[in-house]
Length: 167
Image (cartoon, rainbow, N blue to C red):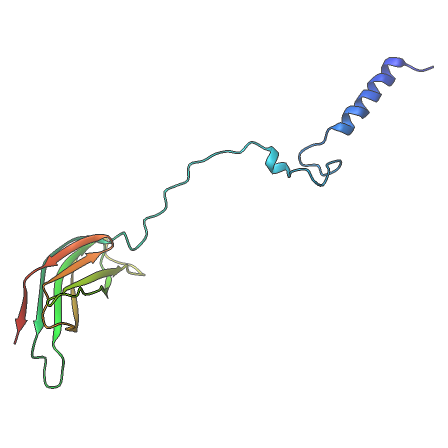
């Protein structure tokens, strides 16, 4: 003796079970079907702003007392040198500074472009705003300079228009 309602329920369960598959189950899914990740809703998030590149940021908080001069008589057999000095304030002690020279323009008295590149200390340092002296010295590439432009990152720290000749 068969029970028609039980047989009908079992047949329906097998039929529905064969048509359905769970997203994490690979059994019964055709190979051409999209991966289960594609079936899930996609969450849209706003990307975080990219950190400011080191070239655009500058560790120098303030600067002052900039001066420039050309030493016309460095000694026998030596080439004249340009000197640029100033003072900068940084967040901690222990900074070191490098200089990058920019291009000279083609005028008779070109402008010298210098970029100050601060290097943060590796170890322990004083946690206070610290004034530090910076100096640049290099052979003079021109007979004279119209100005010296000093930048750090994307900030112009100073523009020196009075460059004296020291004899």
